[in-house]
Length: 438
Ligand SMILES: Cc1cc2nc3c(=O)[nH]c(=O)nc-3n(C[C@H](O)[C@H](O)[C@H](O)COP(=O)(O)OP(=O)(O)OC[C@H]3O[C@@H](n4cnc5c(N)ncnc54)[C@H](O)[C@@H]3O)c2cc1C
Image 1 (cartoon, protein in one colour):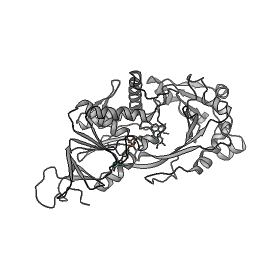
Image 2 (tube, protein in one colour):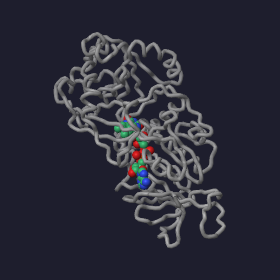
Image 3 (cartoon, helix red, strand yellow):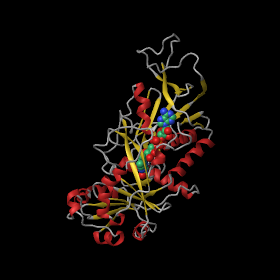
Image 4 (cartoon, helix red, strand yellow):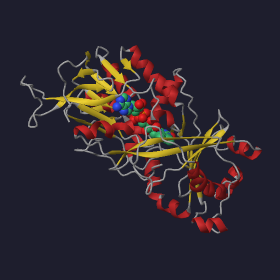
């Protein structure tokens, strides 16, 4: 494919930087580039009609500092501290510090003893709840492995609750608006309703003869072509296209090691007294039900106080294809056969209730380790791989991608962490295995 400019191309003005994608990663990256140098002429392009309407809008927007990988801990902890700080300064992000409650089987709890020591050593508080406390507070079935269904489904008894207070959820729309307004205030421009169909490549040192770029010439990004045919030139293209990233990069031969994995959320209204009580239990955090994760299979329940509902999800893996649909449809069957049967064994409060709404989106999944990806190649910076934790790491990711743009060796993250800007790339990838992936 010929990915170069052509004679007669309809060019919009040059930009110093073009960012493809106005999701949390593209916005945070643009924000930190302009914060460092507001004279930069920066354009963010998105095919949607406004910012944050891709998978950022589909998110449960939950956050936690509870990771086995120290890198993930740093990315999340610094971002969460930043979000808490700006909220304290008057920018309402609707943060609800409900905490995460991991319900553990005995086997899983035992396998975590050393990990827990390490996590606590970092200063992360993890409170333990025994079965009688959990039963009393949550009205949950602790012993499920020996019931007829428990045996059939291979369910595990609850043995311990691990409660992480520094965790909760926020409003992704409000977070998006914070970065969006900042970028605008610093002079960044936006082009919505426009799809980039091609990243244009040219030799860094053009010979000026017809037919360039020749196969033997080096090639670097020199702009983008929109679906309308218009081209926009820039020597710096940042791809923050989330799950769409391979669609842009595969055709120019750059592998971001990203694939889309469908993820779904089912919302169950708290229509009974029992469910209303569960939603508003105060014992853990003084607010309401924590973000609660069942023993394997790790179904999660995220309270949604505004709607008076529970958002319920499960991240299935093997058997779920890496398929991509521009507008993915949620599967009610997935709730009925994949979630409901298990959920009601632990929480019979959900018996006979079906979702009143549901939606589906995609994790941008790094096929290497499910962790974020930030690298630079051929004048293109790629920032993606948010998987199921892009919101909670968004601020740190934006700072790292911006530092890479300025060719810095280290990014300064909020809270004083220094982060190697090549650590999330492929040549020097340096991120520990993560055991707590949702
Ligand atoms: C169901 C679900 C639940 C989740 N829950 C959580 C959670 O609880 N906590 C958490 O931290 N994370 C969660 N996530 C993950 C989180 O939402 C993502 O990691 C994060 O939003 C990724 O941001 P992004 O900017 O990389 O991608 P996106 O928000 O998808 O942004 C990419 C943007 O690029 C645009 N784009 C793509 N291609 C083009 C093109 N060719 N031309 C123009 N524009 C283009 C898209 O329109 C889109 O707006 C969840 C995700 C899903 C799907």
